[in-house]
Amino acid sequence: MHLDLEARFAELERQQSSMKRKLNAHKALIILLISISAISSAVATVAVKTNRFDHIVARDITVIDSNGIVRARMTSDAPDAVMAGGHVSKRGTKAAGFIIYDEEGIERGGYVTMDEGSNAMLSLDSKYNMQANMIAGPDEVGVSVLNLRGGNQQVETRIDSDGARTSISKSGLVLMQSPELKLLNAETCTRYRKLEAQYPGKNVCRARFTEEACKACLE
Image 1 (cartoon, rainbow, N blue to C red):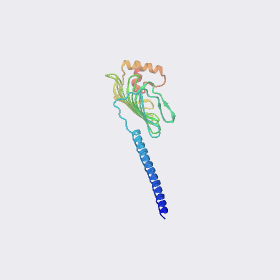
Image 2 (cartoon, one colour; image 1 turned 30 degrees about the horizontal axis):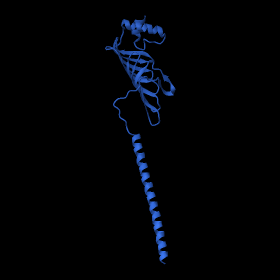
Image 3 (cartoon, rainbow, N blue to C red; image 1 turned 90 degrees about the horizontal axis):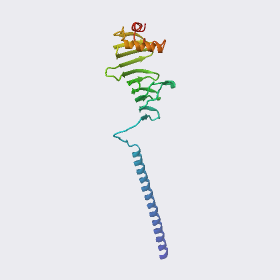
Image 4 (tube, rainbow, N blue to C red; image 1 turned 45 degrees about the vertical axis):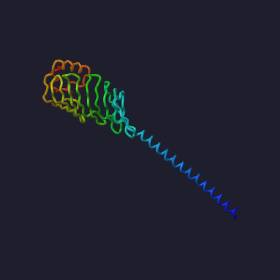
């Protein structure tokens, strides 16, 4: 009887010891999982942390949306504009500045300086062409222009060496001008005679001045 009780006590102690080992193992596993979770959270926090810089030097900075589509670009050499249907609109000269794009990645405007002529320009575009722009020339007494376009019509307010005026055009020809310039200065006439000879039949003068002013200058 005495030996039987001792055997039972020994078996109970063995079982208790086994349970302690299992509990300790579970505790260690729980601590390990908690530690892994904490480390993962810390890594995730570092990954989404916003970096702040006092100074950035770059040739090109591109901003994309959650779909990977370019929505804005600050660049020292802007690429040609890609419009709806894949149509490429040539800039004609190197341009540097800030370009904006819509949800399809189509260029919709920008604020740039142009290497040729050194003009500063702000433009707003539809998906198909430029609809509004402002241009400032580089000279102290230079050219300032505001253009609004819609369909085949255009309103332009301009200040240049020929004076200040607002012109209303349709299909590329000036229909109305206020105040109307009836006589262009000699430098302007010389420039437009060359342009008319270079681009015959393109009505280069009529795109900027009235029929009366162009006849007096070119004939």
